Length: 512
Image 1 (cartoon, rainbow, N blue to C red):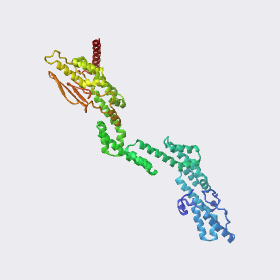
Image 2: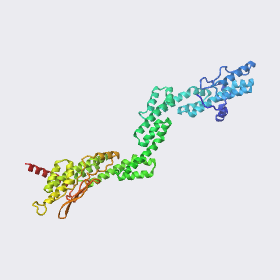
Image 3: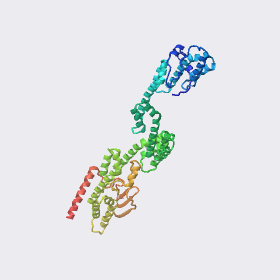
Image 4: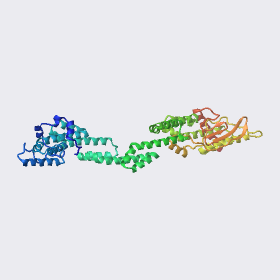
């Protein structure tokens, strides 16, 4: 293991002198390291206390030079060897080989152990601390064996942590599990030093692709650029870029909602507040949290308004939807109100047939024989026309008696089909469920045909508002009450049902 070089002077300042510089006897007795992590002990052995002749001095000098050239020698050993050679005396060489070499090796081992302790995991730190409290042999054993055993424990713990934190379908999780299944220190180390980076990059690319698929225009553009960029650009998008782009999309979406006349007052007020605040957090909070709540509130308000102005069937269906979920409310606004109003319209036409003059009765029965569009057309146009015919026949000089309905129906018709129109459905989808009632068929103009007493017959329909007025009553395209029969609830439903029975019986009698 290659570690930064630390001079013996620095090591001496950090480590306790009494520990760093043991007695000559204890240093000499310490076992010498033999592995790659420990310094080389040389091959000449420990020389005699003093050279016997000049030949011994040459041998010592050669040994010192060999130790100095050995790449396994530590910083302290090199410095001491250089000092011995620089002194140039046989005594200096002998002193280095007998005492200085062991002291320098001990210093190098402690310095290397301290460095490993500083960068190691929990198990490595504990093993290094234990070695520093022990002997020279303990240091050598830690450097040659102990650090790798402890590091394998740390590697396993780290891989297990990565496995627990990774997504179930991620490459990181799959590769981490493979390393754990292999179980060897080499497999764990290889995953942490090499494999993790590759699998994480694949996971990041998949994450960006998913964001691209679900994001708005700004997010899609930024994600596409990130996928084409170096890996640093991709990680920067995941950490920062996606949020900046999403804020742009959120602002554009809120501005679109505010410009749409179909979203309600709650959505409009909360959206404008988010725009005024202007922070990415405020924009995201509105889109992610407030918008669904405000949409439901606005939908329930719209339902309440329809329920207050509708006929018996509309009120009953609206009341049921109000007691249900948001999905029930949306379903009523999209479909249920039209189905219920169609029932109210038929009951109203049956009542008109029962109480109207000959022309009115004939037109009403014909409408009841048709579909819902025929019923709606009668209420919007046919009723007024037939009444005009009855009133014209009742003018002075006419032999026909004046026949006037005693009551007018409580609800008014709509020209909408029983299910939401395609355009409205598309609008609902675009606004996430916010519904605005569609307009009735566009018919404009006002006509007054015949006057009896003070009652004028007037017909007005307006496509943009869905409002229709026949006589003095207002039709159900707006859901407002008309004049005439004012009893509501069960009584109105009962009267309408009875009228249908009477009409049916009269038909059978006429046909017989």
